[in-house]
Length: 162
Image (cartoon, rainbow, N blue to C red):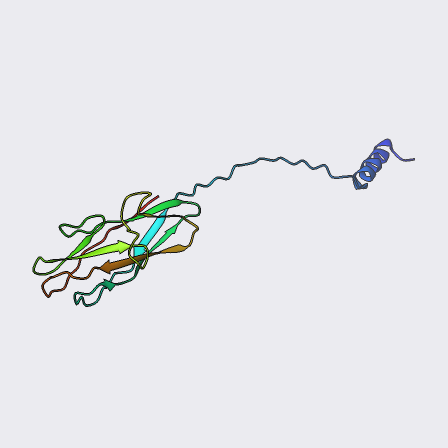
């Protein structure tokens, strides 16, 4: 005869060996993901070189490159220069003997559309696209200026407002 304890032990072991579905639980959490993209612009310019002035009109080409973050509106303005007497329409280059050689900054080869610093009137507007955008500047030294022989130069400030 089997003892009740051995029957109980065998039953307990048999119950423990029978496959049972595993009981699992899942806990979840969430977190937010954020980022801020600030509007930025970078600007560079190619020097203007007129070469030798002989009294006849001299044209040159230059460009301004602007790279702004995508969809950032911008305006590029050009100063009239640092030489005395420079104005929005007529820039001046100063020589070593204080003579001034006048020039104009334009957006077309005919020199009829001025480039300067009046927002919405003579600035170069655009919108960033995450790539470099090149804007043309068509400077010209007008004919008939009577100046001493010298090297002439000035500095134009390029500003990008965005």
